[in-house]
Image 1 (cartoon, rainbow, N blue to C red):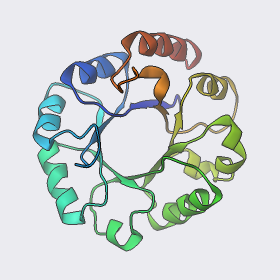
Image 2 (spheres, one colour; image 1 turned 90 degrees about the vertical axis):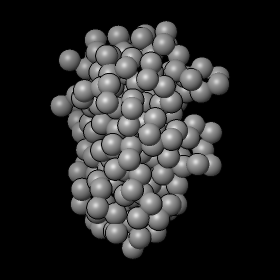
Image 3 (tube, rainbow, N blue to C red; image 1 turned 180 degrees about the vertical axis):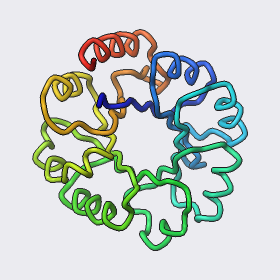
Image 4 (spheres, helix red, strand yellow; image 1 turned 135 degrees about the vertical axis):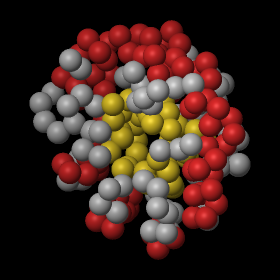
Length: 202
């Protein structure tokens, strides 16, 4: 099955509608007040009311389960994204579907992902999977990779994975190559990637 696509830092209806139109399935919205791209839950709900199809992913910090569940309802979220080191016992109190994310990759992170995969059989995982770190993330079992979103700073590794036989991730989380320096979506670069992506991933 062709991997899906995820874009983070969605902060406007225009960007969200563009993503929906080109087939991006996961839209990441920051609900961590300390984050530069924080968006109020009401604004996220208003954006999602215009769309049909994409999954709304709320990216949280270390808020309590009760606060997270309240924001899930207010923002009309489908998926809760938590830091990889969010306490396991506390995460188990969250009833929404969970995605654990990491901004770095190390042996410790790989081990943590394996532990969380056992504790949360339905959880998803998002982490950087650059070629120079392939010896790390390829330690993960195929069943974990199949529910992982691999994040890349450039498109070439994505194209390489699509062209090869074998286990494919659930999705690719798109990085700097589809963003302007200020973090906003670069439509031209995104268009070029989407065109190439669909030409390979038939």
